[in-house]
Length: 99
Length: 252
Picture: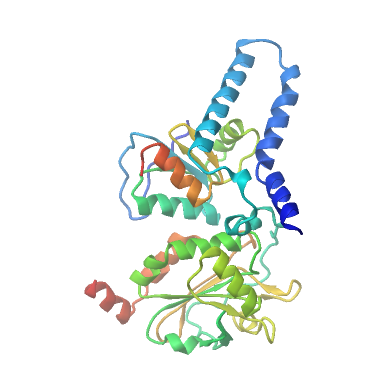
């Protein structure tokens, strides 16, 4: 798995999570920003992989998703969510016991 | 469209991506020789099916209902793309913010000066119902408390009519004002140097106007489908040497 440094907009490093949550996206994508902010508001630690800065992660996304590199793609403890809406994200977090 | 036709269209639209992937998966079956790798694909496919069963079990069956507001709010996902390059540069920071008087969805006239004394975020976006915009305003709705914490007001502006704004805000649950730059069309966007004459709508642009009516931050997205970085917007608001926001911060 591609690893980017764990990062929070408030300058503190997030704790390594028991259940990994990884957000693949771009800074100019509203849906990516919304997912990241939703996780931050819920206090769910996550890794953020910026696809503009880590183009090598695109192939991994294609393998997971059957060919598309849609963003955001969110990995939550075994589930790969392609462009989830906030309800789907909440469901997946609940299934993983993260909220 | 009759109710039944809408329901059929809904049934057809919902699992489309899954269906396409399933068809592709099926067509690949005969192209791979028997091997552990092929078995691995099959195992993975089985895992996906079990996951789907779990998801369906824990949610209501979508096939039992017709189109609802959630479906309408997701229409933008299949709307025609809007990805042109920007044609304009924004007014630079330090410029006095041009005045405007535009109606919100309830018909009330909103003037920039109404917000003297507190920072205002002006969000120019191309059109209601279009791809990209939906998510940008959803993002700001989700973050309303972050704007309030910074004592900032937020106003969306597009060339759509106030009736379109009203319907769109209702469907998306947007609570901050959306202003109709409708007649003369795009006049406010022109004053802020972000109107695209060729298209009849504005660039996707952000302005932060301080409590004295001076532009302190401006941004035009390089492409229409690029949404400005919200962390950068928060940083721009945090950088304002505004007395009111300081007071609000101390008070809280």
